[in-house]
Length: 142
Image (tube, rainbow, N blue to C red; front, side, top):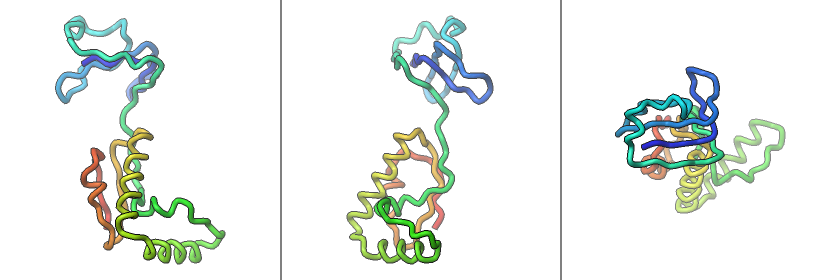
């Protein structure tokens, strides 16, 4: 599979314009300028031109609280202890089905933002199914 894009970010070199990513199976065989694509890669049958897009490595969110996605509208009063109390109170009032749905929404937000790995902090009462069913890799801290 060849993925073409206007730009590519590679941690080992400067950003690349007019880029291509060559994938075989589960391996990246080449990432760089289209002009330097290895000859054997040109035999690939599958290709996708992403146009004005940036190919980049997956991002890591090392400290998430996906179970709190449902509380995104909770206001911060300026006092941390009061805010934690408000979080705990609001969390207890949540219907389990809504919390599960919102946790799934949090997973989708991470994926749309480019995250491929997450370190998620969960309370004992949380249902981690949305996280476990997602394509995200990472750790759950309970």
